[in-house]
Image 1: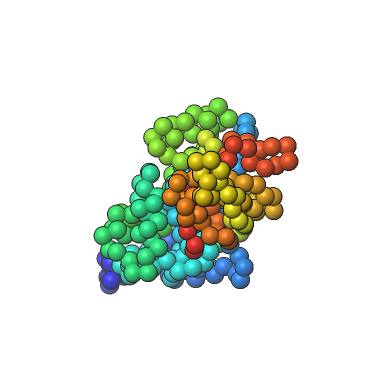
Image 2: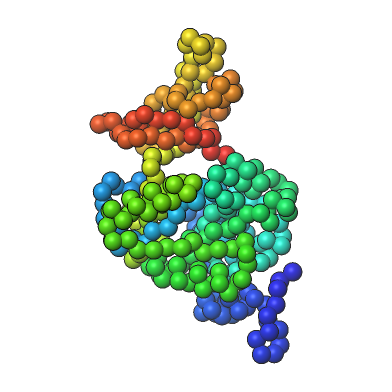
Length: 290
């Protein structure tokens, strides 16, 4: 059921109120074109000044895109959210993360991937939104639009991510340290004057104590010694087409039953070799299919 507010007389739905704030009684959300994706972040260059960027915490959640009618994973596949959750969201297309709290990724991932949603689980999560999907304004203005819409919606489960400006690289590292000490994953930096565009851009960056990437499983390397009869390493291919073996960080359970060929896994690394391969890479998790 839609909640209602009195604006003079008669009663009008909260979606109409939000729509009027966005410049029309029912603002029509743009659909992503075929083959178009969400914005994707690059690793933040060491020592770069954050001037001209808006900085926010990077939440370890599940990416979720709201087009005004449907909630989807970043791949475009539908998320089976409860009807009450979807009915309460504003008509403004949003990009954000479904989140249950720091260190709760596995619990969250299990909840949002169910084909039949569990109400109790969904009432314990939040939709943290950081962009107004597909709009033409620069990012700083899009943040203002979505913050206004989220404020008008008055939903405990819907929150606008807080963004701030930092003066220099030292202030950026201090902010990163503060977030990580509290159990956070890292930071996101978005160029304030950037217009929205899909895919990986030079306007969106992520900063973590250790950077991470995803690779596709091509095969397996047999284990030796204590690992004889098990998987010694995953043979991975990076999005850039480079290949390497990843053994560090694999549990014995994963060595017995490794991710299938074609699966995508996330790994952390310290830096890169001169040829561009990740150095000191360590397995983090299997990326669940979306």
